[in-house]
Image 1 (cartoon, rainbow, N blue to C red):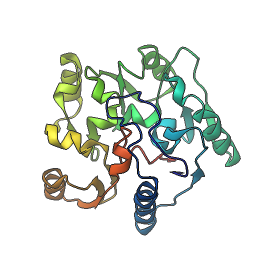
Image 2 (image 1 turned 180 degrees about the horizontal axis):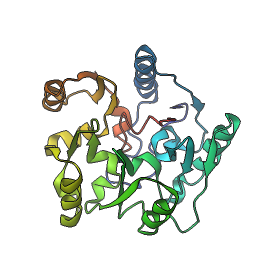
Image 3 (image 1 turned 135 degrees about the horizontal axis):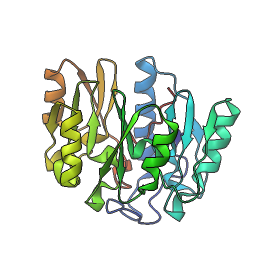
Image 4 (image 1 turned 30 degrees about the vertical axis):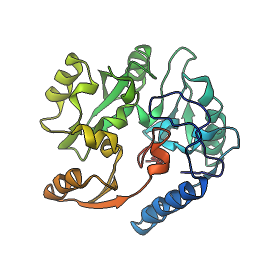
Length: 257
């Protein structure tokens, strides 16, 4: 996780961003509560300090994806975010975590656009990730890489409209995807739940599943009730200050294994 020491919305690179809308003190409080929740659940939390001129650096999930104890580093399409990678790469190397850097023409934003399901890796393409990424990842991974075309700019990242609960159940919002991509999801995940538009606006798909617990943005009562019926315990948290930049609980969390 990256501590929001300088978090603000200073530019607009997605439809969710609200310039100058963040309450920094409240954002830090929300982030601290999320970090404390992970620790209470027995999760080791490693923290980077945010650099001053990189407001989106707090979204650790976007920085890469862990595959076989290696981190495939992101290559950001938006110039505003490109400076983040150096500091994460330096941090990974400090802890002797091997990293894989992508070619300059391969755009990829880590766990923001890549979601694992069994032996598959779903990758959302169209806004932040290009088609070259699919073949590149396919060449270096053992998992099957499935291209999911995103067709609504509000869902520029896959983790805003697609959520894997476990190796059996997943949630998604069909209007976010092309018809072919909806078909690909249905042919791979047999136990699918459709998310409501209201749940999308409350970042339900940006939840985090940990064992028998699921961390969910507060206000998603209907979504939480479904998760509960599937045998999980919802933990409701408020990260609304980060939603003002287009991020949620999952965005703030970079998995190291």
